[in-house]
Amino acid sequence: MAQAAGPRAVALLDRSTWPAALDSPARFDDASRAEILVFAQTLLQSETLDAGAWQQRLDLKAANLDGIETTRKHFWARLVDNYRLASQGCTASSPFCPPANDEAALREQAKRFDVAPDSPFFAWVEASRRFHQIYLDEEMRLAALFPRVSSEIGLFSAQERNGEELADRHFLLTFDDGPTPVGGHSDRLTPWLRANGVNGTFFVLGQSLQARLQKTSAKALGELYAGQCVASHGWEHKSHATWEQWQDSVTRVQALLGKTLPDNAMPLFRPPYGQRKADSAAFFAGQGLQVALWNIDSQDWNARVSGDAAGQRVLSLMLLWRRGVILFHDIHSKAQTAVPWLHAQTSAAGLTWEDCRSYR
Image 1 (cartoon, rainbow, N blue to C red):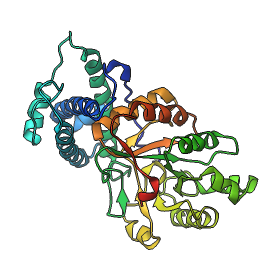
Image 2 (image 1 turned 135 degrees about the horizontal axis):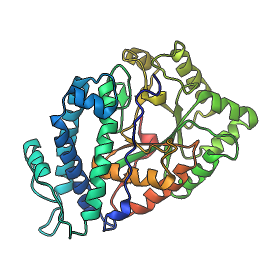
Image 3 (image 1 turned 90 degrees about the horizontal axis):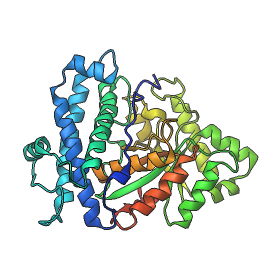
C-alpha cells in the first residue's frame, strides 16, 4: 500500500521554453496566469471522462469518482482565486490576461485558450500542455485512491495542513528522510540555506537521527541544523496508516527531538508517503502535533528526475498554485541543485520564503 499512490509518469517541463525572465512581480504574474490557463484547459478537458476512462488513464483497477470530483471542484476554486490574484496588475500590454472573475468565466477562457505558432510563447505552451496533462494525472490518481490510500491530496481534520493556508506568494521549503550520515547531503544543504538567509523544515526519521547522534553529539546536530527547523517523519519510513506501532513511532521521535534538538524542534509530524489513519486527529491533538503535508512535490526522490528537472518542475507548480509547502529530500543530492536555482530564478519576483519557525 505504501507505494500504491505513485505516478506512472512524472510531469517535467523545460522552463527555458518560457521566453521571459521572472525578474519582477509583474512578470511572475504573467507566467502565473499562463500556467493557470493551461492547467484550467487541461482540467476542463478531463471532465468528459467516465469511470472506465479514468481507470484506464490512471492505470487503476478501480477509481473513486467522488474523490476525483471533490478534487476537481477544489482545483477550480483555487484556480479562480489564483487567477484573480495574478490579474490584479494587468495592463493593456500584459500577456495572458483575459478577464475571468468567477469559475464560469475562467472555464470559458480556458476553453478558448490558444497560442499562435508564430508566438514567442508557442514552444512553451506546447510543452506546458504535456506537463499539465501528466501533472493532472498525478493528482487525480491520488484523488482516485483517496481515502482508501491516504496522501497529501486530502485533509482529514483541522489538525492537518498542506501549505494552501499560506499567504499569496509565500512558500515553505521542507526536506524529508534525513539526516544523512556525517559528511552526507544534509551537511552540504544546510550551510547553503544559512549563507543565503533561507531556512526550511527538516522532517527527520528517528532511527537516522539516533544513528547520527551515536556517531557525533547533540551539539554537533545543533550545529548542523542551526537556523533551521526540525520535525518528525516517524521512527522508520513506513506507512503510518498500516503500521501497528505508528503511535509509538510518533512519540519516540518527539521524545528524541525534545532531548536532542529542543531549540529547533517544531510540533509537526509528516507521515511517510503522506499516509496516516483517517481517525488519528485526537491522537495528534493529544500530542500537541499537527500533521504537516505538502502541495508541491519536487519528485526529487524519483530516479527519473534530475536536480535540474526537479527545480523546473517546482517553479512551474509555484506559478500555478502561488503558495505552498515544497517537498524535497535531503538524503538525495538533487535539492542542492534545485533549491539554489529556484532561489536565483525568483530573487526579483516578489516571493517570500516562509520562515519555518512561524509555520506551527
